[in-house]
Image 1 (tube, rainbow, N blue to C red):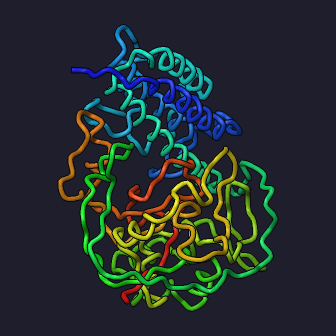
Image 2: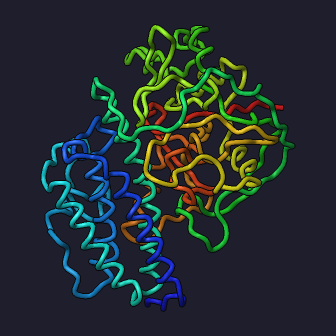
Image 3: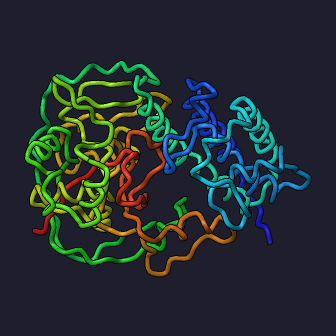
Length: 422
């Protein structure tokens, strides 16, 4: 039985809905139809597909299922823009999303307008359960905003001209190194991790539970580009003793010699970003490294990667709205970690690989219905990352937030923070 919505909740969601949807459109604004259609690799999706899929989510799970009389704009589009929801039937193969030249970008944007108008009109009359789905849809779209930036960057990198999507007003780095890394000790004991309370959290963040952590220390900041350049110069990519077997096979198969988007020039390293090719900033956190690379670097440094319990225990004392995160459309690239005491850059700048597999917490229960496919079905073979990045919309992450990717993947804004046993 549907429950009545809390007074004022629909009004708040309407404002957030407009804000989130506007940011997606702003991210895509510089793109031509061709830019928005290209798929650079099977792991990525065209920008047009992201814009359409997030619209399909609201149309399907809120408007179609919860608003009497609503009819989808085009019944055929569900096949094109369903991602992985088996409960919604067959869908277009993910590796072939770049073949969808139609509907055109203009048609997708017009569809977005129509869905937004219909949802805003329906909000005041939706029950609490439907508003929960609207909230989930907003959080889902914020995830796709980051994915859009990741995928657009991968798309533009495939162009030998390495074009910039947005100009950058940031000055070129002058070569200064980051402050020396410091270690922050943590005592052993039982700690609580996971989401608690009534605020929004994805199902994979629950339930809150106790975990024992041993004596350990965390680095006060992420690993930098300059430190990674030392790893390269010392033969880190050529020493099999530093690598997992799968990681070493991946390095050999793909000829990996540096992080993704690093470009070696006669003057040293540069990096490609959404602001084009720019000199590598040695003080900024290293970005676009796989779990294989992060683990190998940690071994080379005489350290290890933190567990997600160690990371969350430290981050529980930090402000998740702090740090370099996405506020407006534009180039998203890591910046040098600000000076200060204690653990810095736990939120924003780069996602931080952990040593933890993405597995269900004790007592995990997926969300009811088809949306229960959102996280639980992916709890196999993937590794947890924590903390958000420069492309994560501000306000989207929290200490309990669990991101996850396969260990070979590195087109996301992923870096690392070292840990060691105390």
